Length: 87
Image (cartoon, rainbow, N blue to C red; front, side, top):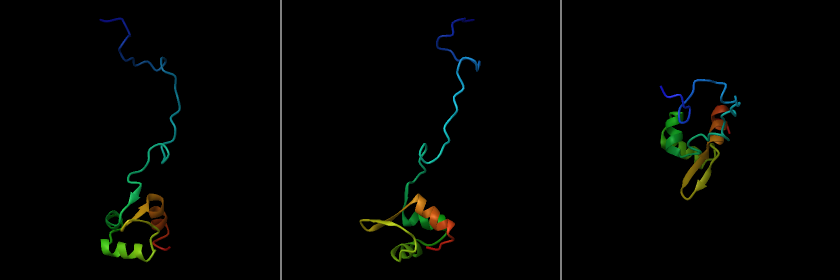
């Protein structure tokens, strides 16, 4: 049996000090994806992609237009869902 502790793991909790772990939230582990596109929103809400695109064009869902695509930040999508689909 090897008595050297170099390079081996120990089951003893006394060797490593207990350090409280930070709360895992969006600042530690960002949610994925950060921005949603109409297809993903449609799948999430159970709507057709055309309906979601129309809602985006009519500003019923808060969004950012990037080129010809609408992008919805996660926080805005959560806000829309929590409001019951009301702007």
